[in-house]
Each structure stands twice: as C-alpha cells, then as structure tokens.
View 1 (cartoon, one colour):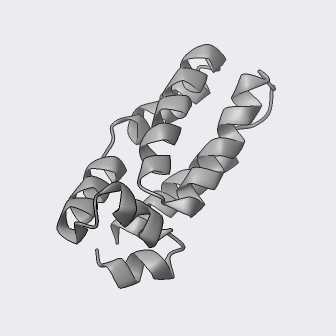
View 2 (cartoon, rainbow, N blue to C red):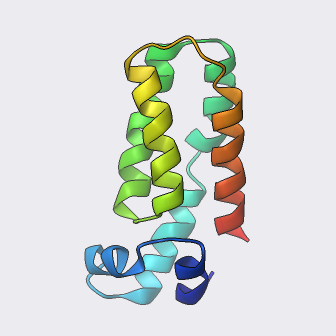
Length: 109
C-alpha cells in the first residue's frame, strides 16, 4: 500500500497522517493493522445470527478504528450499517456487509 494508492481509493490521507504525527511508515503500518482487524471476519456470522446488539457493538468499535485511519469509503459504509443497527432495523445486512468486505479488499490490494 502506498500513500498515492490510498488517495486513489478515497482515503483522507492528510487527516490520517496528521493523526500519526506525519509519520508515513507508521500510518501505513496502522492501516495494515486496521484492515486486518478480526471484526471484519466475525461480523458476517454475527449479522447472520441477527444478533443486532453484538453486531452494533462490533461495528461501532470498528467505526472508531477505521475512522481514525481516515479510510473514508470504509468509514461511510460502516457508519451506514451502524446506524441501521442502532435503530435495530430488520433489513438484509448482507449486501452492505459484502460491500464493506469488497471495499476492505480493495484497500488491501
């Protein structure tokens, strides 16, 4: 992953770098850790079980991680899902979850 690629994918790199004190290597390392967060994998089964409280907690935590990294496309999708879960809406979450995983995979290259 490069800074240019992050920009191309829609990340707010300047904001992310600011949070990492301008240290590009550190920022890229944090992105790798954030994109490897196990919640990306565990959320699918939680959503399938329709455990909205657990899903909300996990998405809300992931929202903080991805928000701090300024990965705007992922963050926007996570926010959308989080708000549906906050309202305990009975919708088909699979398309949104699939979109999130697809976006994450784009960032992972």
